[in-house]
Amino acid sequence: MAADENDLEALGEENNVPRESSFQGRLQLKNFMFKGATNGSSSLEPRRSQRLLTPQPAVPGTQRSSPSKSKKRKTQIQSPEPENPRTSRRKTTTPTSTSTPSSPSPKKKRSRKSTSYAPPSTYAHLPHLPDAIASNLLILTIGLNPGLQTARTGHAYAHPSNLYWKLLYSSGITPVPCTAQEDQTMPARFSLGHTNIVARPSRNGAELSKAEMDEGVSILEDKCRRWRPEVACVVGKSIWESVFRVRHGRSLRKEEFAYGWQEERMGVIAAGDGEEGWEGSRVFVATSTSGLAATLRPEEKERIWKILGDWCVQRRKERQEEAVADSKEVEELEET
Image 1 (spheres, rainbow, N blue to C red):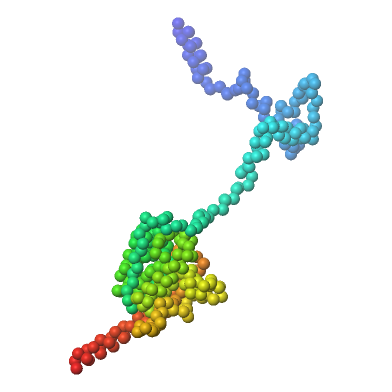
Image 2: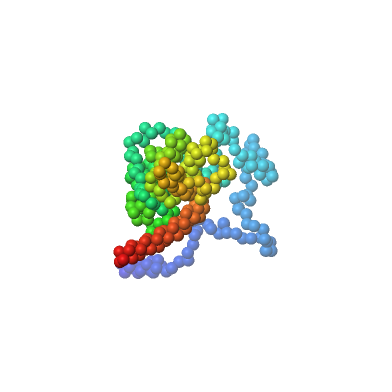
């Protein structure tokens, strides 16, 4: 019994002794290690796989090709195979965007619809614009006709793109900035008024006929005779063309027109039959203030309006001096 226990103890001691590690009976990695040249000399040749170096049995019916032929064969294999006619036709018609980036298409400008004459019944539902006028005005501006925005609001030159109120202030005709809502206060505040050659509203001047514009010339003459403004400011070349056509019976030639002061007057009253004559209102042709009129640059419009503005500033100053002198004379007469 004791002998058996001694044998077990000896066996346990042998199992506890560490043994050298070994891969015997398993995958032998040393067989796959690179050993270099066999003759002991250093070689710079690249390592080759053992699998490629070992000769492989040839398959019957096939022939081993040379490296040059294999390259050709590879290029032949990489070439595209014949496609279905339907798919090839579809590919040729559709452009490929992967080769070159497509340039952005140019932004198309929004074209306005061409307009022509529109009868008065087209905008008969819109009210006419009342004149802002009084006697002995410094300037009476004569516009073409009310626009749709002006007719809806009931105030002159009410469209945001219209430059009328901006040019009045920048030229000095009004000493402070004004808005369309103040149009009826202009005669009392600054001795300025406004009217139109055609009373009915329209979208633009193309919807008016020359006949109705020519009919409005006589109405303008009567207004100048009645209210007698010092200056009749024609706001736009087309209005003056109508006045010239009615007076001379022909169209205004290009070389005959120039913006600014004109030699002719409006509302002239001939003396006779016990009626006192009147020399009429001076005529100043200014540029159109409409946002649709783009024949002149904004700075060019301001330059032309500034000519009238300088005259207005000087004439307003003279009127104030005349009013002071008149008041002094009245005071002297009252004292005597």
